Length: 110
Image (cartoon, rainbow, N blue to C red; front, top):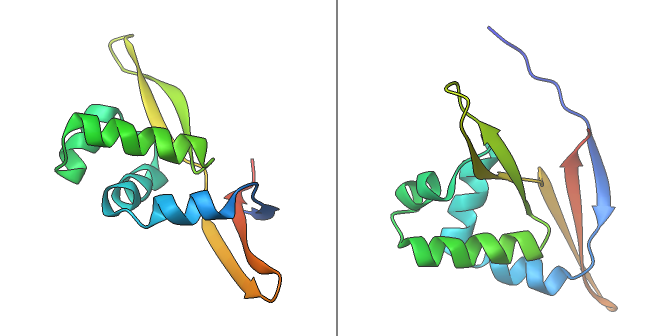
């Protein structure tokens, strides 16, 4: 049995409305969930979401712009490499008060 420990840091986000908007989409949420356990290619995400590749790329772009996803390079055993995407968020905290809505992101500590 393996144990995984992670530390998180809470970080204020620049545009909480954009992040909440992108999380309102089922395909975007599926991408975020799929990439939370490691990088996935757009092709893998297309298969996972059962959406068209165009839809997946649009959601990937929205998640990248909202700072919920990062682009990285995944190296394969045969020496080839491909672009992959990985979630950057572990937890979102939403606070609503008289001043509006505030979203804080807990990210894995690097």
